[in-house]
Image (cartoon, rainbow, N blue to C red; front, side):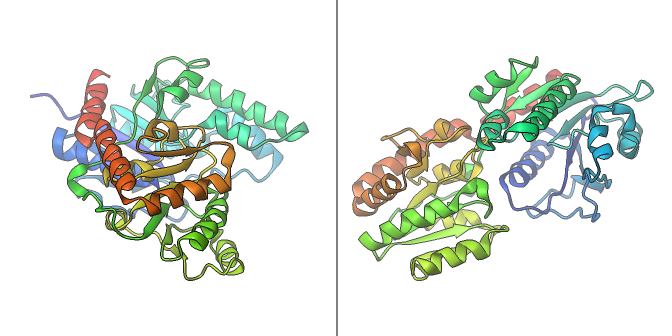
Length: 378
């Protein structure tokens, strides 16, 4: 009988309600229950938090090893180019060596890249959960800041070349990373249809889900939906999520006199119930790796309306088939397509069914089998 493979995942925290935390919790639960892996999650936050917003199997071990990644002084910032300065990561390296993990995966902290010779061998994996090169374009900076960003990017590539595998969410992003790195593997997100109920698409409710931050651009969505509400006043928009812009967005809603039409709801664990009781899903983010909320919406059979953006949006939205892609971030066109769907139940049903059929390409069974085959090959 073969020995269980020991997997380690490092992440800042599992307390968040975002797509990364949801997909990681779902993945490790499935791997343990269906393929009998030995799995540990290390959180590196400074508060010692090990709790998870989403359910985790009792068989998943969660350990906190605090590592301060903040860079306050110029000397600290320059230290990122000096691997020998990573003394603060020794506790994590010692833990990896002591537990003798077979495969270690980083979700951004890149903490175990500077493995010293006296540590046992383990496979190193870096997972990209966002469209890094497109994010650089979005954050347009010039002069010294731009130079600094380029240096950071160059250093990041140098670091990632020490990895055994790079995981990308889409083929588009994989092709970008392949310009710089070898062994890039595409692994999209997944959904469990057994946990989902297809919406009847008969409620007068539009749903959006995500962190209340600049990246998600809910400001544009609120502006567009104010046009929708003026045309079809019996429809409402629910935005589920937490974040630093809540007060600003609420003031925008009040300024537009949309308090009876647009509602900011807190992040909830039972978001699937909200999809099932909605009729249209809208997505306005500037960039995404592979929008998990959009994938979840397809699993509930919702028609999609989204700004065309970099990342996985174009993988999930088939324009004029299961929804509408809005180009050039045109607020008026976004509103027009939402209005079209609100007024045409037949079109909603047709596009919603298409969404559901497309979602089967990302079933938990098929994607997790790929993960199991991948881990088994290492």
